[in-house]
Length: 305
Image (cartoon, rainbow, N blue to C red):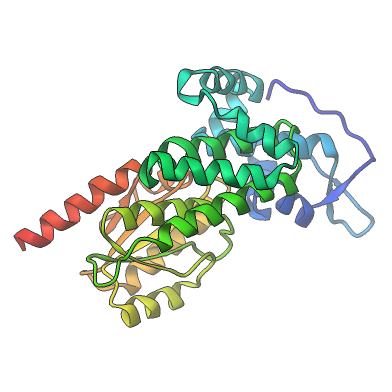
């Protein structure tokens, strides 16, 4: 990597704390250490890894680049600064116009105003437009601000809570009783990020699907049991970029093996691109707009069966 990091003995964090701070799993941190030579933790008296604050900041930046679609190999080969410059150019494009106002409300801790602005946007633009054109890019902007140290972790959490509340309220107003298909939504164990899952649920519901959300981190066996109990036609999993690739592929393979052939398995989120070669019976959905196309294909196939 082009950026050189200094080693300090101040503000050292253990690997569990770094996992919480960056959203990168312990396994991912260890793999990168072996494969790319970064991060470079020291060891405490018990031999446990300890990470200086400058490395933690760099890991946060790397995580945000991954959320934007960059692969770790490219990040370490090209350098973080190069890819961040491109990301800043993308943020300056007309598609992001107007988004900083919400971030300024968040920075000023004007949470009630932020909630009101989000609710008004959802009512004014309609739920689909709000999710795809406002919520998704704004979430990326908030994440980028966090990665640059412009927002604290708790401020990102505050934003996430407000957005989730607005989305849940909008979804609750949609009546999906008796709708087809019935979609079971969750994440695999260890995947704590649920905002993308909620945005996907909103699009599914708008497209006339009946949604059953189990929240995050549902064990594979429990997912399979829930499919049978609910009579679900589709299992939709959300995966962030920081989720370990091996764990993702294993979890998807195990789940696919437990489901009947009639039940489809759809995977979305920033980490789902790693499933391109996952084999038959798994559909990878690149973005929220892809949910519409996938549902249309499912209904076409059902009608012609």
